[in-house]
Image 1 (spheres, rainbow, N blue to C red):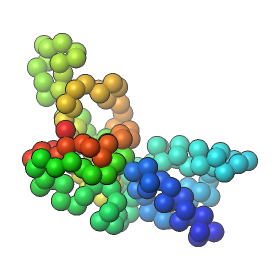
Image 2: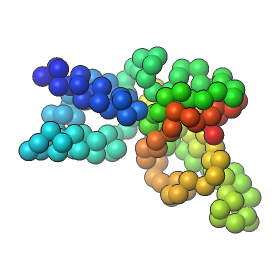
Image 3: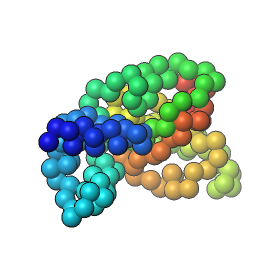
Length: 148
């Protein structure tokens, strides 16, 4: 039913996971389980494995990344969002200690892209596969269009 699809989409969006209604409807049709919690868990697993570039559709201004985040300077993101890892490059000194490395990444909410740098090493980011989902807190700072 349309109400269940809309409610599932709202529940995902409340956690920073923005996808369009068509994706939610298709995912719910595949998400099975004896309880509502089991269905929600199956939906979450599908989200983790989906490609946000096809699942996000057209996001509204209050969903995902702010449209003008690439022009921001010294502003907090203001809302939590789950982004997909699109590219990664080590930009630090290759001879430095592992904990001194710096990664530059390209992230997307499916509709918009933004660059980001590690401020401190993020466990597993150097080995995360492209397509991995990354939770970015609402307090994340954007400086010169780059999320830190």
